[in-house]
Image (cartoon, rainbow, N blue to C red; front, side, top):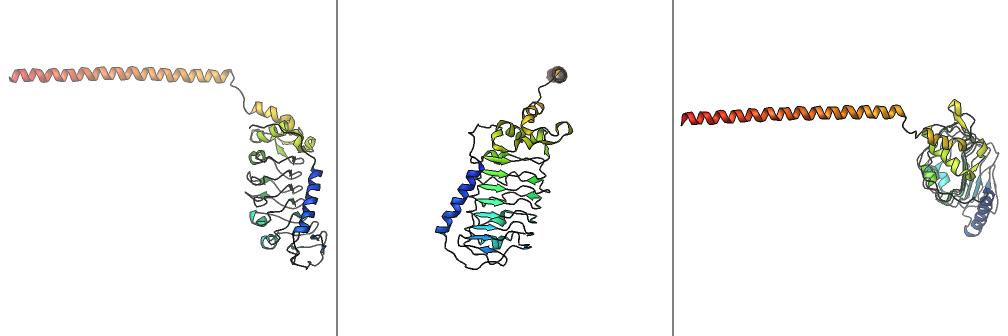
Amino acid sequence: MRLAPQPTSAQPLRLVVFLALLLGAGVVSSPVISAGCPDRCVCDDQLVVQCAGQHLVAFPVDLPLATRQLIISNNRIAELPPLALNYLSDLVYLDCSNNSLTEVSESTFGNLRKLAYLDLSFNTLRRIEDRTFGPLASLVMLRMTDNPGLSDIHPDAFSENEALQVLDVSRNNLTALNITSLLALGALRSVGLSGNPWSCQCDNEDLCLWVHLETFKFQDEGQTVCGSPADMQGRRLSEVGIQLRTLCHQTLDSWDYLFFVVIGFVIFAAGTVSAWLMGVVMVLYERYIKKKDDQLELENEEEG
């Protein structure tokens, strides 16, 4: 794994300012298509729909199609219906935190190409599938913290999010994370990994080494610690990165060299014996052929 050093990134606060400017720009460019507003929600002339803390059990209906910000946090919504959500093609900001969401997929966000901020924290997600966030070409900040059952993130879940700058998957149940696609995201500046029971073994070597080499990228790096094995518990990933590099790529010891010497001798001896036997067989065969030829010549002379 090759990691090029990068300059210290801007603080996430600047991203919030960027998002605010982006939302403000949308007010001018997007006409209001629907003047309606869902029950128990508040809609304003800034294309913001506020439905937080309204005890909703289902995704709100009759949303204005030009909505730029949708806040449905602190409810009991269990599903994000792709059909209803994908009508909101101008959506830039979506806060779904503190609900009962169990899964999201590529189809969930299929038409949200302008979405820059997504919060899925404090839900009951268990797995993130391949290309889940693929359609979100403009995604800058993704928060997916505090999902206690979230134990698996597909290696290509973020592979197409080239604009992603902030990724926070803190306080889930992750033990391993394939970072191949994350390393390819040139815009990524801030990563949150703390509060997970990380496995500090060879199958997670690349993650530990990444945290070691680019510590400045990681939020709460001091709380990003190993959960297993027992002799690594509580140690920071940044501390064990080099140690794992050594342990997982050990050099040969004296017994290994002795084994290879013995194997080499056996192979050499077997080859020598095989060559000798082949030579003996060839000599015997040539003598047999010569003897047969001599017999034929003798018989021909007697007949003549």
